[in-house]
Length: 168
Image (cartoon, rainbow, N blue to C red):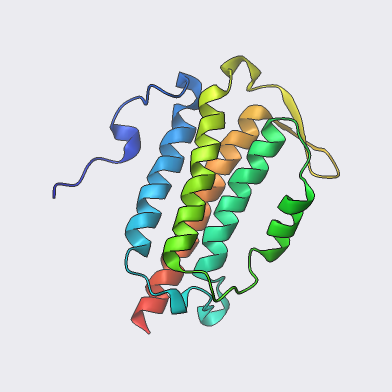
């Protein structure tokens, strides 16, 4: 099977406004790479923390949580109790979760985030959005971009952790 170029080199994706193409490209690229990395990854290693690194399961859950939280803030909404509970539980081992289930949950969060992205009016990208209880200053564009770069950052950490676990 011939490999494709990276997502950003495949051209514009019609569902997303031009100003948000880089966000969509980054998220879709990370999604593809995460699926490639996690293919066949044994579920019994999901919560392992080699040399004190965060576990693979934490990264998968955290990426999903960040996408959900950044989408909520971008819509000028406050986090709800379920989101706070999820945030607190991202790193709590749940041995009943499989690699496939975590990927399915992540894909669902990605789909919801990308739907929001496709519906975002580029004229709102500079609109103020308060983040968290302290209402720290951000913008719609800042939140959407942060979701993508945060996902990329945690993919990189996941990659290292998975590779270390596969060497053991």
